[in-house]
Image 1 (cartoon, rainbow, N blue to C red):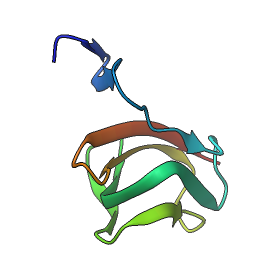
Image 2 (cartoon, rainbow, N blue to C red; image 1 turned 90 degrees about the vertical axis):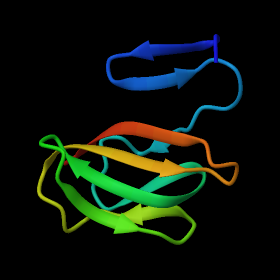
Image 3 (cartoon, helix red, strand yellow; image 1 turned 30 degrees about the vertical axis):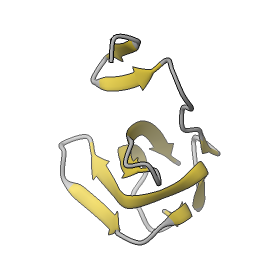
Length: 88
């Protein structure tokens, strides 16, 4: 859509809701501002570290090594989100 802006490699939609993930940096459980499905967690090399197909409002990351990750998922309308997170 015309209202969408590219910032880095993440598409930020200016019309409609944006996803919030918290806490970030995260130690154990990462929460989402809305339920997502088809959740993937990628490392900075693009390797899939974690995958969850069922709907969820949170994901457990306590067993991951410290570092930066990219969370991707879809909301109930099929809108795709991707958010960077820091595991500490």
